[in-house]
Image (cartoon, rainbow, N blue to C red; front, side, top):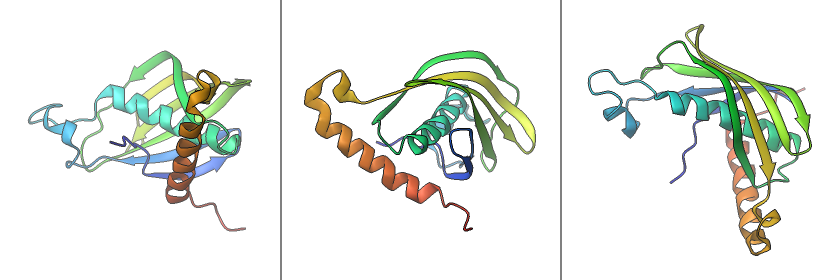
Length: 159
């Protein structure tokens, strides 16, 4: 099962920042249990939305050269507002530092103009075959899949 939390990338400044959108629908199954009678997006999924946005920025910056983007560290995370069905979480990730395969971001998410989540996030980009050469084919399949998804969620502005 794919667990894609980015519905659309609205802005992308290569190697610098990304703005993306997650529309929350009552049809999302986890809302039945979180919470009955008061459905809201779990905080961990708000964080995952930030991580996925950062991952798309890294993939774009590196021309999809890595198959895997992994969360390494989260610091100073704050949850400030609920995200309920019918609302959109607008996330922004800005690169603060990049050192080889390690990327540090400042991330934030808003709902209806109000802060919902903010965090400092560290991500690492790598290929599975770096750790196990037998996974080279899997890397290529994953990179191709991400290229296809990216074409669906990002349409560059025409110049």
